[in-house]
Image (cartoon, rainbow, N blue to C red; front, side, top):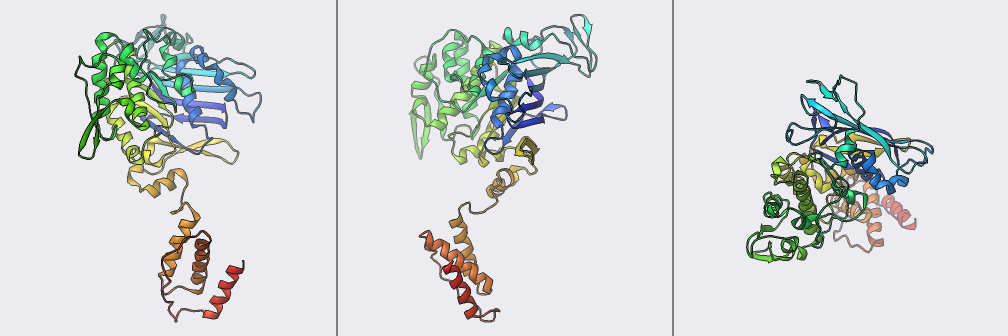
Amino acid sequence: MYLRNLKIQNIKLIRDMVLPFSNKDAPRMWTVLVGENGLCKTSILQAIALAALGADSANGFQEIIPSLPDRRRKGSTVTVEAEFQFTPRHVDRRKYPGIVSEVKPPRLKSCIRIQPGWSLFQGESSYLYVNSGEISVAGESLTENSPQHQDPLKEARGKSLPFWFVGGYGTSRTLPLPFSSDRIATPALERLASLFDRGRIVGTGFADLLKTKLIKPYARILQHALLDQDGTLPRIDRLELRGKGGVKSAKQLVESHRFEFRAGAERIRVPATWLSQGYQATISWIADLIGQMFWDAEEEIDLEKMEGLVLIDELYLHLHPLWQSGLVRALKKTFPRIQFVITTHSPMLLPGVEKGEIIHLKLDAGGNVVYEFGQESPSLLTGSQIYEEFFGIARLYPADVGEALYKYGYIASNPNRSVADEVEMQRHLSTLKQAGVEPGLDPVERNSTVSGNDRDINHLISCIYED
């Protein structure tokens, strides 16, 4: 299940926004939302999740309703409309509620509303016309612009139909302690719960939940996802799956000494629970995603065949900038058929992203959130250029003292500096002295042929210090 378009009205600071998630009639596989705090990045992820669930299942997260409406427009209806598509892959396994026959997988429209004063989501979903042929729904042929209203999402989520996959990960992605359970009650909700700050992700706990025949394949596929691509788990060279009968439980997977960690020339084998927060968080959400895919398909599924929509809030959390810079490229290779929509405040996550994959959120003159696509490809920019282009930081030195030191050194080393330059140099020197910083550079002798005289300079400098 892939996202094609999203329309949001009256959510927080979003008055009326339409976001495209496809390129040339194909889903855009990566979208990165950037913008200052408070510009609704997380709310956009949650809106996508709610639309993908459908109104009935979305009410499993009804506690979020009071926080969504735009407080500037009392009495307005919150609306989320999303268009999804399916691919021909898994067509023999995927069911489309209400469809008798189909020429190709249909598109799906989902609408979610919150009426003023209501504490429940309302809405419906329907199939859309497919250009290359008609779809027969309960004996009735669909034509262009004639959606039907049987609400297929309601049945798909109610029956937990496979290959309608949407998952989400909020900012809490700790490695869970091993636990036992014989079932996941509501998969569609539980795989999105952390995006709404509810509960914990299952993560490596799937080694306890999956059928016995799937535990070893799950551990093996997890090993490939974590270690095959440089940049996914830096300095982890090996995940040992053999020994003592191999991995048979979540406890063995995370508490046994199975992760081989590189420390200089040494190799140290440690449990996952001994690794840093960045390692644990990355292992946790990737293990959860693979486990959810196995659970959804009820069979082993290779990484390159995994399809669906995955939403991640602040992917960069707990990761060193050097790790961040290679993570997106690694994930693109590991999960080539998964559509990711993520948020970030980190410039160093962007080098793996193309300009058409970045949505930059801003405020317009009326205080409403609007967006524009990135105009430059981060892979071609320096770190400073990324800061300026996508995060609005144009100064070489974010701190005034650092900038003063740079400018002082530049002017002080120029023998042809003018009277105005001399005054500016002394102003920067004053800033440095007030901050207790010694510039470590005496000005070179000024060229006597430069216009202006020392009396003028000394007068101006004295004025600076008097101020």
